[in-house]
Image: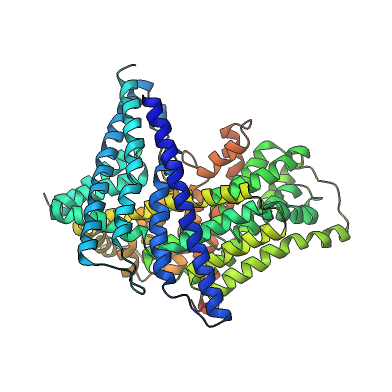
Length: 163
Length: 434
């Protein structure tokens, strides 16, 4: 069951990362078109800054789960790695528990923030792209992060109790 | 309990979480949120949490980071590093220690299109180490050179640390970039001199390679062309005000991509891999910045940075001594923390103090980057050394650290020169228009 969930979480995070990659490339292409249009043809792409902003939100949020799976976040490892295995498992359980609490909170608040932006009709500065879908999107993008942390928490708890 | 005491408790808890291996970004967000909730109430803390994360993830000024990171990963995928090394090799390979000198030069060249130390080490390590092994170079010298020279990646523009520093201190990214040019050239010279002196003392460490003809040397210069053109286009464009920082990064990324396509080096697989690498690094950096922002709000309500500024400026010490203390804290912190994380953690704390001391923030940015360079090569958290170890698994970690020591001396010499002659860093930014 656990390994099936792990596979699913990796699969989902992998797909989300593709969305993030597309958003990142869109940022580059939009900026390139805007610069070339502006410098060579005196034609500016209206709302290029707005598109770059929302694309970045998508890129970063949708890459978060894979970043966690691959352990690419900056961490200080020299102390915990020297502890006995059982102690490591206990400290990891505590840390994953705190991380889980934090990300559940972030996901919940991003949904609330998305709703707030929806009811307030908030949009970007130039071409008024509605912001609420990106608030909801970020919340959804961070759900696999919670899933990855839950799986890590279960694994470290199992190690802590010696299974 | 007064806000300052809560702030100090928060800092201690955050350090404990760091040591227990919680990702730096998560620890900063968690402590920043909890501390803010204690001081301002749960309601404002919850609203600030989501707003801060949304605002940072969608921040246009931060979009410069993914663009320059993407430029570096595309440059790597386009095989630019290999051609740079071949040029260096053709010019200095026949001297004693010549291959390591070529490595320093190639790292310096690659740093001109890539803003990350780890990417520079990973890239040049893969290219240079097999060659140095082939010519019986000492493993300690070879690995130490690559790990140390890779640190040039954050001094010679573009540089991710400069970008983050600029955003935190409201300085011009363009001015900071050009401020790194002369110190970068100076450090390259110091590294080459270090190799020369090490090999003069023990010639067996770096035997001379086969001689090359002048024709070969001149032909090899073509390997520099694309790097020079891309660097001048991107950094020159930023310097002259043609591009905003984000635009410069995007143009550089497209430029690196086009070089790869023109050279037929960039396959679909390499393109996907470079985009993934760029996205992951950008995500990591922006998460840390979001963490720093959440934590920074907590620090602001504790008023610790302002109290620290008042206290330190009241000390009977000259401003230079106070700057020395700050630099020492960065230096010691660099032993234990990633340089990016350390920068986003310490700069907001010391910023009010730096302002009250009337410090030239462009010059100080270069000093911070030099200290960060020391941080990435010193134990126990010398990230460049770990990347090097990944490329050369047969070389013990101790040997790599031993190989780095002479370069650490060169970095300290560079730091002293920059403190004595700040004009080296401040001269060029005077001409920048962005």
